[in-house]
Length: 293
Image (cartoon, rainbow, N blue to C red; front, top):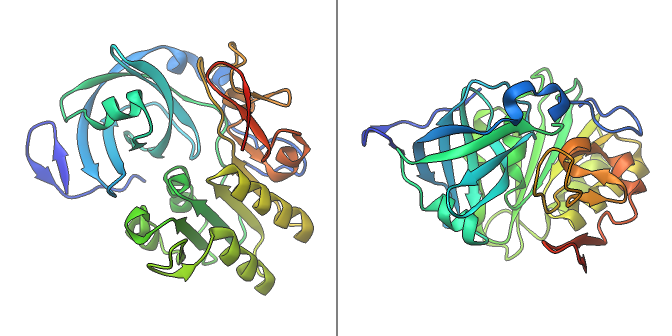
């Protein structure tokens, strides 16, 4: 159930790249975004706690969006941060996992409060024909859920959702409602298969029958998925995550081996990711210092 700006309660609503070989997945970048790069003020219209750690905020915004794109969210008096869109229709949504001051402030907002939005920005996933294996680690399922809802329905797709423990599994009912086969994994074995999402993915890929792979989650997990895709000749689309400041390719904060995640990504092909020397090995902190993953 959702808390809304009017204080009433309403039922949850569900809204709703080409992996071009070795290139970057195609999408609509900010150069094509027009006034979407301009800051707009929106009002929070709904709020729901999805897990003990994740809160989803909803707001109306008619700007078109692709699954996997992100918005820059300005929290007045705190910071501006990138957030993946977990709903891409006119009633958009962001899934807030509290990790610092800005996400804590976001999670504390209530219906009726206002924030600044720029976007949708970046290049998203491209839903393509063929049976898909979708692999999500942690909150990665937030960016993948709109994609799952847009995948062609001729073949039943498989979605692996992995988390540390049962209470952290996100959007399971939503993915089931989209008609996908769902495989759950937890590191502590509290539900589903005990282990990592990649453990289940390897078993599924050995059975065959998948034409493409989509993934979002911890980078070490995605590197393993990209390697599996390369070994089996299956195209992979994955969503990179780097520290972002401007979101439009100017500040260089999100650069990874010469690629700007905010404009060249965040979604790139697995082939592209495997050519990046930093992929799955290191990233840069807020001050630009390199740190190991």
